[in-house]
Length: 394
Image 1: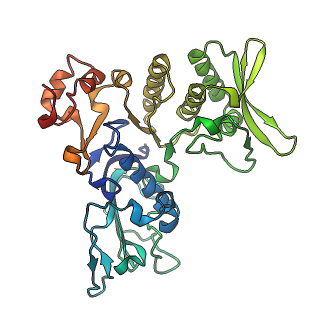
Image 2: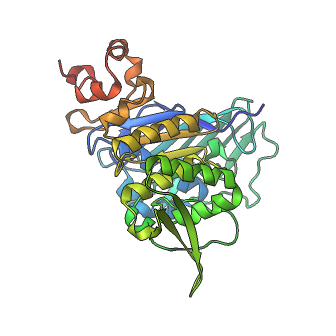
Image 3: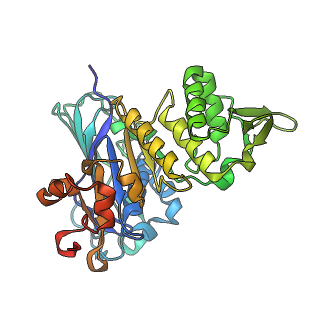
């Protein structure tokens, strides 16, 4: 039986606030907690940057941060290094992404991967300095800073265009850990209720800000009516006054899709729905999708949701990961949400003395496992007990 794609650990170096995250273990559900500015978003954005580099191109991948130099950690030295032999001139301390996991599109079994990105001397060029992929089967492929690849025990691997360009990754077509289908959410309810142009060719993917949630729900309805009806039923549990909610197609000037909620005898268009209603709809759509992303990453998942909705959402997350075919990463500041989880789900992020973020799993510490038998994680978080030992409240 083929194991589903998953990511078991990630290590990030020199991305935004992070100098070196160390290996961060990921499970079916991983919840990052920490103060504002602690580095949670830096880790999430590093995952997104990795996906963009692999699936697109290095220069275009850096556009969300207005260029590589702005996303490159400023605390590390990036001194010029002269050309040496076949190695190109470059700046020191590259941005680095290392991850391990299970399941790929083309190669079975476990894998480990690493990518280093840096600039040339003077900062006038940008290039992938190194990539290395190792598979449990013994297959391996590497590329150097000149774009020369070397494959071992991989007779099917070849680049038909010869040398790989500076901004193109050798990981692009391998589907490592389902990387191409990772889904990131930073929902913006201000745009989610507005009509959105209908996509009529191919599948539909929910936008990061959720702006096409009506179109995405319309796609689910076409793909699997039972899945769609399950989403409607779930929404009615959270919003008992809603008798129905449907995506509606209008074509007066162009084909647009918008949401319409039915309450008693009248209908409410999506642009009048509450932010919490729009957010829970988008989250339920992804959690109950007939084609769920292998990795779903949601920042500040509790925003706009009341305690009852948060509790229901946690139950939906538990149900989703029980299928064993997906992973979920969330960030939160909500002790109430944490109280619904186990200590093993949590990764704390802290910046001692304002330095680089430190990522810790509190369930790896015996003392905290003992405390967790008496207090729920949210209570431990509020009490300051999930901090590092030297900063812990006594």
